[in-house]
Length: 250
Image (tube, rainbow, N blue to C red; front, side, top):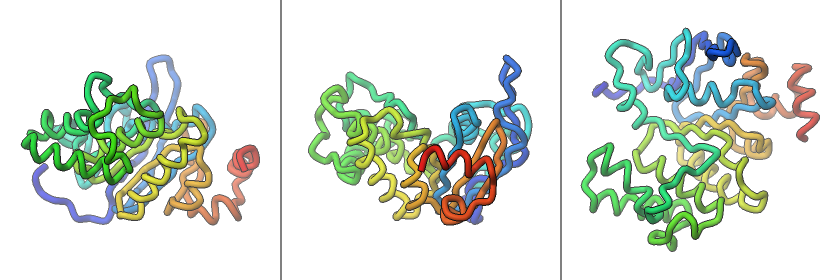
């Protein structure tokens, strides 16, 4: 776990299957490789397995079989410290999950102090810097209830970044927001992409996928059907199911 991995592949998922107790086969032999610094957007209809696959990448969902390697570490190998590995995989959810009794700065400082054992003064400095980065430098000492949904989601992004992750996972980060707040969150995500952060994003925001993604994955019924560039996905796809899906959105 201590040796730095410098290979170009940040995530390698091979023949991943997830079957729930009720028999639902949520992931069917899904294989995907995501390179270091790559921005990959996953699209598809509801129930297609997008979020299940994303959650499997930090073992919030246990897979039934297959293999997932993150940053050179086999997630399911004997002896892998999954909690240590999760420190390197930031995740932003649809709901913000902020602690209401802590200030914005307190929310961002918490994991670095409690989990990474960072010195409180250093954690505070880092939190302030990250909150300025997401445009909330003037909100350090307010509480989540005093913020808009878009602002709360930006705090959630800063909180995930506070652990200095190697990769960021976003699970429909704008779907709970009012339309006028979506742009401010997407702007922060675009900034992260421009800085070279490896990102995997489940979203219905096709404009973001077209503009920011290096590659787009299309899933349906637990299967990964298409993996291609945004230009090919949105302009010249020959896949009939993908064409049908996009025709309802664009």
